Image 1 (cartoon, rainbow, N blue to C red):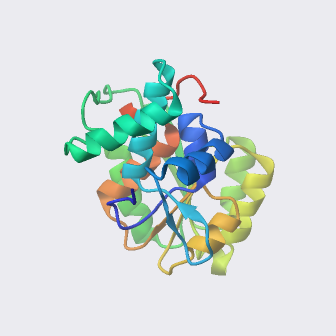
Image 2: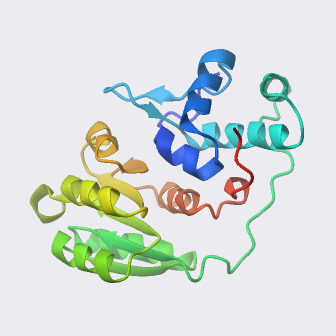
Length: 225
């Protein structure tokens, strides 16, 4: 079953972290059951949509309740045929739980900073913003955020190098954004998700929430082995 969401956003590593499902298990499920099949980038990397993640969350919960993986995937297929794909039982996120979360915006465009800062603060996040990689690096060293949002064109195109440096040294979640399709290069540098500009406010905020695990259906549970 391919995703109904046209654009994949999340790397397989990011999905594994979100859901506590090992990367090899995700690959095995894709090959064996073909119920959650992410799109592929031009470079061949798996890219999962929010719909894909929700389906995997449903499978994980069924396995945690005692079903075998084959039965969990079969149940997902039955739900899809009934037109109720992973909608039942979703719990809305409780207000106020994001207040202490820090998001660092490393942007090249002051207008983009204002746009992103506004929508994140509206959701209750604590946000810091910088306009060059040197300032971003200093904050990352002194007071690492929970999520780094980085425009790959910052400081004359130094965003990819910043992503690689952050990934090598920290476990900070990274959302890369760019006005050009740099998806493959971003994933190769170790980012967790990529969005192409112009950003859709709802998708942008939802992606940050997913990376933080604050979406109700992405809350961490027991690992699926």
